[in-house]
Image 1: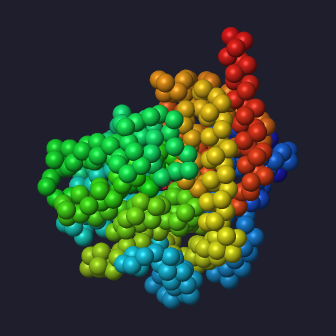
Image 2: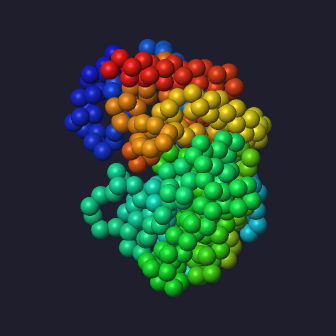
Length: 458
Ligand code: PMP
């Protein structure tokens, strides 16, 4: 196969026939051949530890046997029925998935992508509240559709066409990069190195960020709003965490103004944060709408919106239909993912291995000046690279690229995120082991050491 499509030929096809906005990672992008659990193999059989899980999408492991077998079996029987007939798969899945949610979140809509799920969540919030305005946090990514682009707040994804009517962004309560810091503010085994005036019981930063949130409510939107959307930990922006009670207070303020609270769990769901199955639970809140994608199908294109019966009834006044949403193949994949998470104890593994990794990475932060912050929960980890810990200026892209390419050459794939692409994103398949972490940390250590040597030689 690779003989008829040599690398250079693929590059040419890419230049001429593939959407140019679809950018690849690395100076010479990997040519992948196969995936197995936490590993990816290139066309020459070289093995890579995948710390980015195919963009946080492979939850239980590449080609996990349980998911593969379930989908193969279904593939031979029936791929698709429209939901105008009955089929057990969607019912089994709806029952399994909603059993994992607290009351009253018991109704599921199945879609095909995260953008589509967030589109539907926005639509539902507006329909149910009869309000229009939706607030999101700056730096968030909630989708690339014209509707969700209004919520997405990263310039690199914005296009100069009209979008975002009724969407307002508000200040990101970023414990590391934001102005009010916080050494005790966030829920992570690793705290920031930057000192602030917070103590364990009283978080000053949280109050300041909530004041900013109120400011947005008082200046930028009508008195009543349709909703507020946030991820429990911001993903694309580099595993950004908020002060401990921020979401709880923000939810209350939104509800006082008649709005619904939407938790975007596209990256944080399905046990990835370790201590809880859903990210919102780590904040002690219950949203009105939850959106799911990526890891929900371990790479199978599927997504979901989970909400209450009451909110769902607003959408039942008229027809709402999705051709592929809830097809049997997706539903068996989704059910097999839930089984694998339970049987392989992957939530606990996320907590144990994730905490171990965070603590090991924190040692590198303490050793290297350019590792500004190590943060996250479970296997949702960010490592922010800076010129120095005092200024916290982002490390220049060329320098980060060298470290990143070096890790890849030594067999470890890492994601990138943040406004300046300054944060390494580590969100591996949840089956990763402590031995893998030792290998990855050693590789990262070597790459950092080489950076120090290069800098000294300049
Ligand atoms: N929400 C979040 C938090 C995401 O990370 C993404 C994808 N990066 C989306 C929504 C959109 O998902 P999709 O690419 O499946 O449309």
